[in-house]
Structures are given as structure tokens and as C-alpha cells.
Length: 274
Ligand code: KIV
Image 1 (cartoon, protein in one colour):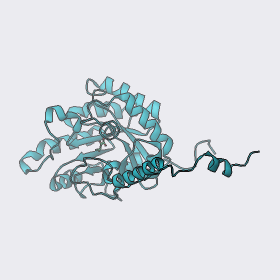
Image 2 (image 1 turned 45 degrees about the horizontal axis):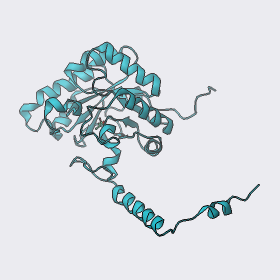
Image 3 (image 1 turned 120 degrees about the vertical axis):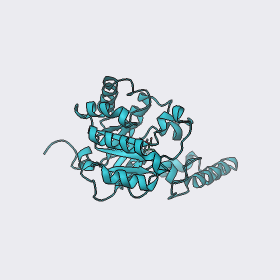
Image 4 (image 1 turned 60 degrees about the vertical axis):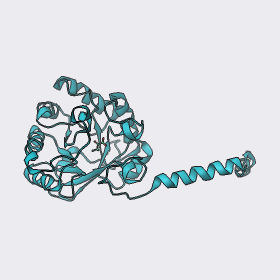
């Protein structure tokens, strides 16, 4: 037996093989402690560049750096055992050339030990996806709303509402699949379009605000836990942790102010001197 752990992590080919199978469950995580919880229930953990909004309070994902992604990717790998960990390539780390993309993606894989990277873009990124996939880097695509392009898009609007606007998004999805991506995120597109793309492409589609017609779903963990100050409208909340955390902090502050907390004698009482 090898020295590797007995628990086998899911791989990109495992996820690729889930097309038309059981829905793929995916959530974001940026820390070892949340990764350990997410890992018990999810097939894929995304170390999303949404960490720029969630952890750092940026308005957009544009300021996120490769170093930030690598640091949190390492934390998530340490916290998880079974899920495929996918790390987002941040804005500016892959668009200039396929060689730039390879160097950035190789750094992510080598320094975090994650199983795949994700990058945004369709037709324009197809050559890069093919270049990476041919060189041992599993790529998850991301089409529809691509938040890293906010400065050219102008707003985070849902895509493909009218049938007349579907073609470029369909072309993007087809290009990503044909380039060799093992799966793709479809963000904020109308249900009929998500259904059509899911039927047309050979790889699993993972929706976010794109309906249950996809092969799986991803959400930002803090959004579905009720921890994000501003979550998108389509997010179903499975908890209200913001108010719970605030109540706990309020209780703590009250205790400290009224000196109603255990002192060192309490700790020493539990640990007899040896
Ligand atoms: O960064 C992220 O969390 C993402 C999801 C929104 C898909 O890319």
C-alpha cells in the first residue's frame, strides 16, 4: 500500500463522467475550517475569486491576485480530503497569452496541490483551454455572466433573457466544451438557455443562478449561510448565520463589560499541576 491516504479524492475525470448522472454538488470555500465541513457533502469545492468580495470586501473580483488564490487554495486543500478542489484563476493571470495562462495555472497546481483550475470566458479563451488541457491542467470553464469582465459589462446583469441574445452564450459554451474543459460553470442565465446548453454540450454544466436544468449547482457558501451583506436574489438561504454570530458577539461583549467571564483560576482548576 502507498503512503497516500486511503480516502481517494475526486478527480476532474470523475466529475466529467457525471454528465447526465447524479447532480454535481459544489460550494465555495476559502478556509481550512469551512472546507472540512463542505468536504463531507460536496463533490467539488471551488476556491472562488469571490473571496475578493467575501473575505476582503472588494466591490469586484478584479483586484484579486494569484498569491491570494494560492494562499487560500492551500488552506482548502489542508482542510479537505475527498472533494475535487478547483481554484479560480484571477483576473490578469491568464488572458494575455496561453503561455501566461500555463505559468499561472502550473503555479496554482504545484503550490496548492489542487486538482483543477477555473477560468472565465468562452470563444476567446478556447485556445487557452485547449493549450492547458493538452499539458496536464484540467480546466473548468465559466460562461454566461463573467464577473471579471465587470468593467466592460457595466453591471452584473442576468444574461440571455431574450432568445435573440442566446447565440453568443451558446457559442461560448460549445467552444469551452470542444476545447477540452472537463465541466463549466454557467452563471446567471435564463432557464431555457441553461437547459439548451446542458443538452447540447458533452460536459457537465454547473449552474449558479441558472436553474435546476444544469448538471449541478454551485453557490457561494457565505451567501447561502446568510453571512454576506449583499447576496444575489436567486440564492436560497439555508441558514441565517449573520444574526447568530452577531448575537454571540453581543453576548460576549456584555459578559466582558460586566466581568461575567471565567478568570485564570478556572483554567488552572481544570489542569492540575504535574
Ligand atoms: O468566484 C466564485 O465564487 C465563482 C462562483 C460564483 C461560480 O466563480
